[in-house]
Amino acid sequence: MTVEWWSFIVACVALLVAIVAAPITLKLARRQTEAAEKQVQQAIQARRESLEPHVVVSFEVIRKTFNVVVQNVGQSVARDVRIVFDPPLTSAKPSEGYVIAEVTMFKKGIPTLPPGQRLTAFLDTGPNRVNSTEPMEYTATVACTGPFGVVTPEVYLLDLAVFGDVTTLDTRDIHDVADELKKINTTIKAWSPGA
Image 1 (cartoon, rainbow, N blue to C red):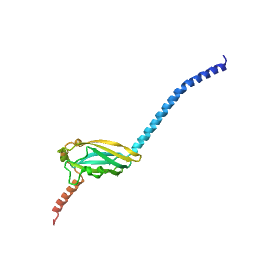
Image 2: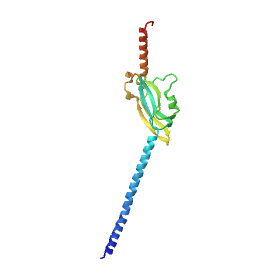
Image 3: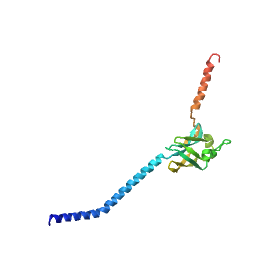
Image 4: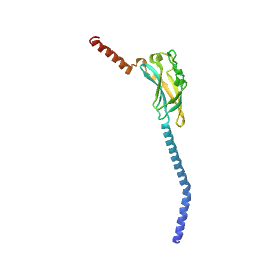
């Protein structure tokens, strides 16, 4: 056998190996391409979600009162914000002319809620709520639109009971400071000659 003959045999074997390996290589290349496309789509989705508005509904306790808080903690303006409570929001002892379910942001929605904006609505006093038969647990569903269209609705499970015995809460704020300053001012004036 000559060198040319051996070269021919080697070339034929290499061709057979290439023919057998081609579908395997093509399949692996296709898998890598699909994985890369999936990663790109996930990155696009994550970036899009980071730019969406994110409207949060929660309860807070301030000075023995329960409030409903709606806040956009996202990166863009939330538009046409709709909040549905199940069961519907009620107060234990509603004030005359004030019905929580009739508050504009709950009844008609919020046309625009910029990033960082926070809206608060009075719900109840702690003692009234704790001593009533009104629900303590609610589900709030928030729907809105963002820069890319309709945002996936968020569902929040809210429970007033997590605040414990609110009748014993005694928080102080700037109003208490102002009251104390007025008392100090009155006392100092009483010490002044001619007072």
